[in-house]
Length: 104
Image (cartoon, rainbow, N blue to C red; front, side, top):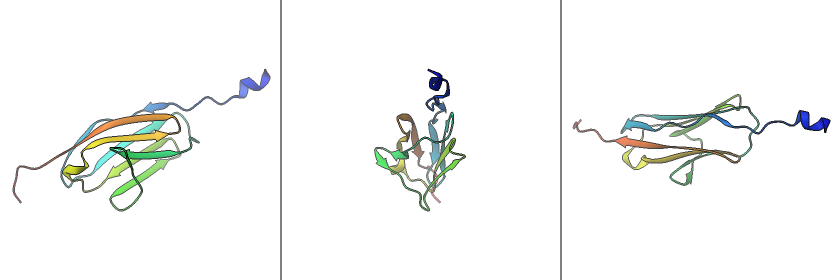
């Protein structure tokens, strides 16, 4: 029974993703904060497709607690549902990319 006192609590989402509206060509940033680090299998998704770190998609974390996704130079077809998964934890939000009415 003494060992139960040292059982680590499961991580929870402290602050989930927020719906984001941006214009074409802008960047969209999503942040999810966990209660503590060490959660395995962290993954970002856009409309069911896994995202990977590259020059358009920036994925980072701060101390394994604050996880950030930045989508750069977004286009209308990037609109959809962004999902953060960490183990069994899931947070989702909508990304709306708005076109511009001005001709440049």
